[in-house]
Each structure stands twice: as structure tokens, then as C-alpha cells.
Image (cartoon, rainbow, N blue to C red; front, side, top):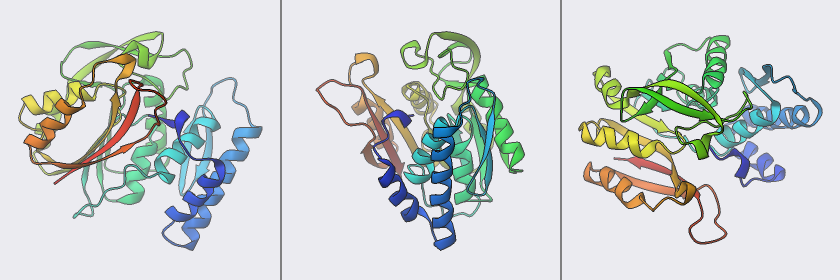
Length: 280
């Protein structure tokens, strides 16, 4: 997740808010929401890190601070990286890395009758995910506090010392100093258990995407979903480039893809985020 490097200035955010509204009332709602979050971010502190709640579009959303909520609203609703077309009005969506639920709310706004399976490993974020789904009375959303991996075991999962953090990873350098033990599962087994069409798998899993996709490929279920939208973390901690191998698995399963860079690079070999939309 790349909220800290999101490239919009506030004026550009306002323009994006207007562009993303489907009609005049929705455009006004987008702009008003952005202004409200900006105001609360600047004038309300939440040093206790207890949940704060505000109205965002048609939703009542709780988070640990208004700054993070503005960042998530901007990244997910204004930039709209998770937009996709579905031939069905009730697509099945697997949301890997749901955090506090903004992506789930976005999908429900896009397809109100969608059936969503939300996965979030960070227990602090998961508590707010549950709250945000419950207080908005969303139906057909299942939530799972587990790590998606290529192994079934108790896994080290790292977050920083701030319980309101939006980050968390099985990689310490991408998560933080606080180590938690979380059960991991195989997404391949979960997908196979659904026994039906999966329209979209969305992954924002802070560096675990290689392990997850390798599991799906090896289990011969990578081709089950029609689409994937994956935030790909390129060269974290100076890792050797592995994008070609990642893409090869999808190419062998007949997918096309578009790639969008989320972070600029200032020198060769720098860490970079991509958003990759795979489709058939």
C-alpha cells in the first residue's frame, strides 16, 4: 500500500473527486468527503489511537486517525486502482489485504450485490474491518484474520508499534519491529472450496504476492479467476528482480495485463510499486 507516496496534491485530489463522481450529487459527495477528511486531519488529533468514526460517502467508517482515512479514501476511491468490469451484477471477489475495509466498501459501492471474501492478517486492522462491515450492514462479506501464504502454519507477521498502522508484512523490513504469530492458509485451497466462478482476486499483501501466486500456479488453480488486480512490490530491500517470473505464470495461463507504476524512481535499483491488472 502506497498512501505515503500518493502523487496527488490536494488540488489534484479535488479534480479527481469531481472526475470520479458518476453524477452531480456523487461529485458533490466526493468533494465534500475530501474536504471533511482534510479538515479533520488538520484539526482533530487522535493521540490515544482509539477508533474515530466519520461519514465517508454513504458509509460510516472507523479508523485510528483521520490522516490515514484521508490517505485510504484518496488511494482507493479517488485513484480507483481496483475498478474492474464484471459481466455479472454479483461477482465473487477475493480481497487479499483488506486492511480496515476501504477496498471492501469500494467493491460494494461498485457492485452492491457482490460476494466478497476479505482477508486481513493484522489483528488491529481486522478489528476495524469487522466494525466497518458491521456498522454499514453489508451482506455477503466473509472476513478471515489469517495470512495468505504458500504454507499452512503459524507465521511471523510484523507490524510497527503504532496499532493504527496500515502496514503489515511477513517481511520484517516491510512490516515493523513488532512480531505477531498469525495462522497462514493456502489461497489455492480456499479458492477450490468455492466451487464456482471467481471474477476477481485483489492482492495488496506487502511482498507476499510471489508466494501466494506460486501456490496458485503449482496447485493448477491460478486460471480460476477471470481477473486479478495485484499491487506488486518490486525489489523490496534490494531483492533481485523477479517480475519476469511472476508475469510468466500468468502468461502461461492465458492472461493479458496492464501495468501502472505507483511510485517514481530516482535512481536505478530502487524499490518500486506496480499495480498489475491481469485479465482474459
